[in-house]
Image 1: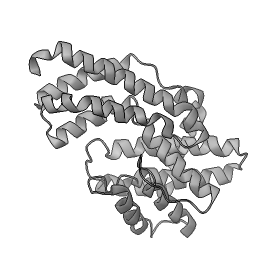
Image 2 (image 1 turned 60 degrees about the horizontal axis):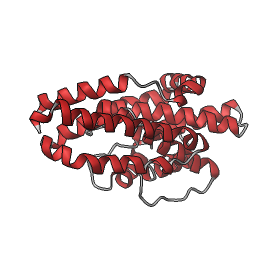
Image 3 (image 1 turned 180 degrees about the vertical axis):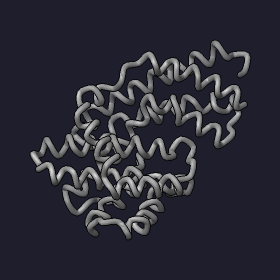
Length: 252
């Protein structure tokens, strides 16, 4: 079965390769590069990344690679949103570090039921030795608590705290675009050992769930660019579904 899914994944990646990079990365290349630089050079973000690398379980497509992508995209969103609000660079730098911490830790309890709530509680313990203010730790833990789609959220006490939650959510849901078909889906079916026939039976339901993410983006930037990620994911998913039903019909 692993061999069959490897063939599906190869075709999926070929389909994804024909699509351009989402506009978010082109229109905001400076913010994305700046976020990456912050991520790689901030001392306590680097230390937290080491912790996550050791302790984040291989969570069926939500492991370290996923956490890093979310952290960097969340940082870029934070830069863009704060620039729109005309914040100072020093203030922006600090808030980028805060949201990147949330990105690194958001799936730390991914395998557990109610993983956002449990991850939030665990993150508070993890962050105790880090040079963060209590309010910053609160913002990080609340963002982790609020990052799941279609679940109740906990309201932040401040606009800054709400923005951490919103940036984390949007960056996480960006992954429901092309990334879903290059990595996440295949890691999940491998982890759960899902038979191919069952996978295809569940496929339409998964596509419906994917489409429902489109109106849920929270930041101004996410609302502008997020739907394109989802549209691309839906288009890729539909094409792949047809490919599997034609090229691999003998396996179904």
